[in-house]
Image 1 (cartoon, rainbow, N blue to C red):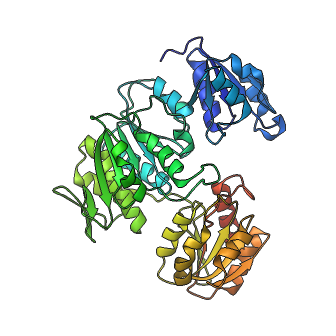
Image 2: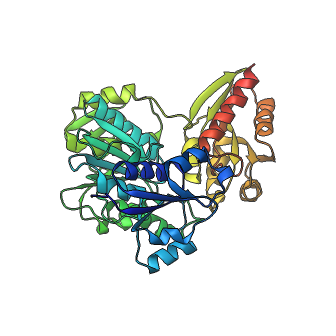
Image 3: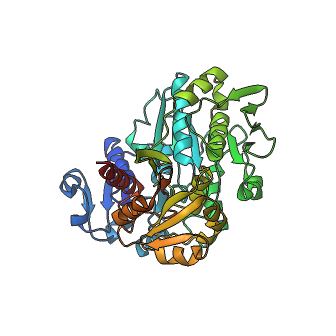
Length: 442
């Protein structure tokens, strides 16, 4: 796509919006950035003003003079300025769509979405590719904006993208060579009208794939089986419970005639076994030898904030699972422990039914320490299941759990909620947890 002299409007000054603006400027286009937050709430607004034509504190009609508008993830598509833009037939795209339009044609794309496990899976795929000698980059929802990379240049073998449902809402031509849905479980129901709408948004990842592309799905997932007829690409399935294209026999992963050991893998638990199978399928077009895959599995370092061991103090283990922002993630966390745990939960809710966790909490939790905006709704959902205590302060919940814990206990932060009521993101929440815990040790 030649963007020289094209006028772009960009909604949002977060990571992906700014990356797109710099890329447009670099390639000869004209970016105009519009941000609804006031200037005082934006990091380094003076640099943004110096580098771009921009506005703060709301979206003006100047956006309606643009040829294309790039919308940052999470911005609702029904805000007044976008309704007017649609009426004027201005093209609306995502940063992911824009990146696809400008990327070098020889670079392959492996794209991953799902409610849980995306970051671990894309990181593992990237690690396997690099271990095998491919020039791979990792971008998207995991933290590095797609367009911040030199994707228009030759030399990148594979671009591995983690994609959220928000990033898949404005897909027009985006066509990954390999696309994966790991699972679809309740999430972001404060944005979507139903689970089916949320699932179909995820399925946009397959929207433009053709017969020479690969689509990978979880055979255990009801939505993956319900909508798979919409896919034109070659379909392959993974499963923990059934014999599919790739499956787990209790000891090794079986993929055709290949037997791949995961005994030395650094990531444990049934959910990570599923992530490993999806990763192996995703790299299968690149003909990587089994011993290379096994080497990558043993050398892969687990990501922070995902059942991350923090410390052992007086025989009490502290585990940071701040990335568990929905009930399904917490279910996986609870099933990863043989001994009962003390679990810290709560934050900003997303419209989920927390009572789905009741059987798992009853089996695995000694006590629940509830924090944040969702604590009252959670208390109602968990009543009569296990001992519960509410806190209006994050640090107090950790101190209380520590004061009540006995040698051999585990204290786990696994919120089932976003962090936005108390923190900027799950990383900040997890880092604060670690800081407080390490302070207890002193």
